[in-house]
Length: 158
Image (cartoon, rainbow, N blue to C red):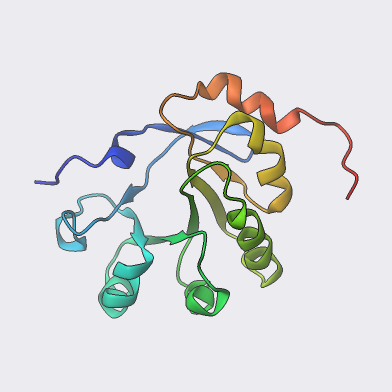
């Protein structure tokens, strides 16, 4: 039986300017791959490094959760394997995830790039400009109101 995981309980997110049901579950030390019932799993970077071979050989659809301090060289080899990269924003004032998203996109990653953590409505437009196409909002954010943040501006200077 899987332990409760706050990210597993969240059911909706914004993806490609639409509210969709989240069908991914994030693995933790308490919820390893052999206990994950779900087909789509997001693996934290440290777990990815420790169990990469086992994960690749599994029949799971893989995603990768990385800190916003991650270097591209740590994850570039995962680009052909994972269908989702989630970048964690520990606090909304820490903008390193924006730069990391741009670097990942410029390196050629075309799949889902998800912002997770301390994400607010006011950031969505700028996050999307950095390369994110999916947003997992904080539990206190209203997703119907937040999605409007993607169209806060009609013209970009850059």
